[in-house]
Length: 374
Image (tube, rainbow, N blue to C red; front, side, top):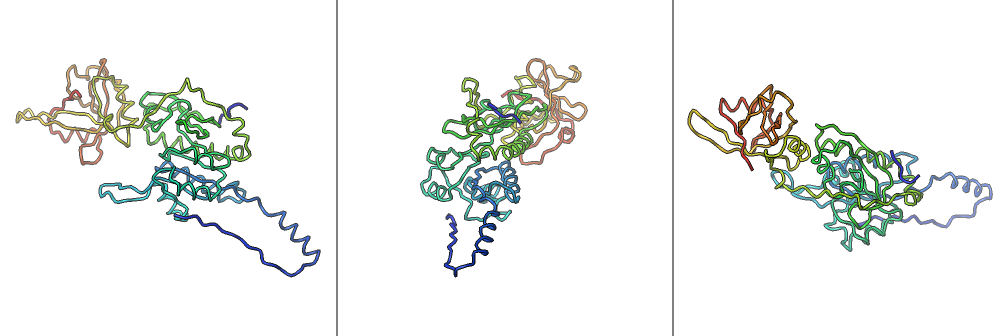
């Protein structure tokens, strides 16, 4: 860990009833008992939506249940239910579903369409939160919101800020082929991921890790970093010691679009391999091929998802000088720009399950495969 520079709310009221006069000895006992009462836990509100956010929430709920915990999770804010899966059934966000499965009160799970909704802000203020934690919440937080938590709002961001500010830091870092990334804890301000940094953790990554696995690793590490820093956040020292970001070194990580998923084999293999692992999960990477049946003089165009790849470092004799796709030792060898080749280990046909390259090749039954230029 590196430190920098050094719906309704349920409000409970407890009323005291008048009691008969008590002896001085009893009064002394009562005072002593009161002094042993543990300090009141600080109210923390968690904001997140996807599965990686649910893992952070799990860490916080587990930690808050400890007898010596400084905080309690008083409310959860997440994206509204959406239609998911093939049936488009309206379902809660992964964070909301996890919280419900865990027995978190449904009336303390809030799903505003926008965080500047006045009714939501009123309810949020009523809870009197000490701190808000965000982890891939997916909504812009207005100034009115940011003024409510007494100790501020802290974001777990899976990059080494100010690098890769934005919605897709892990995907864009992998797409760029970085070998070192990390996770940052930063106070949230109105500018995108630009708040003062509380702490960060670096992580070296290999060239085969995919975005979903790296996301899990970084948010897991971010959760641990958060628990370590919570005492300093609550006592105010984190705010005092946080380091302002150098905006001149900032890079952006814009949201991934489905149109970006196509592979162009005119590019070098390392560029395509990095894109395959960066876009793994969603939206995936696709490429166009043509299947040629020389016996019947027929050909069919095919869109194929490339699931797992690596840069081919084998005998260049197996790299086609034209557009032919070869098969060698269980992998498809696809010629790419600059005399390089992409080794493809797993693919997926439209509407089918993921299969290894050998199963795909065997299914061709002698037909040829050529890449198409996009």
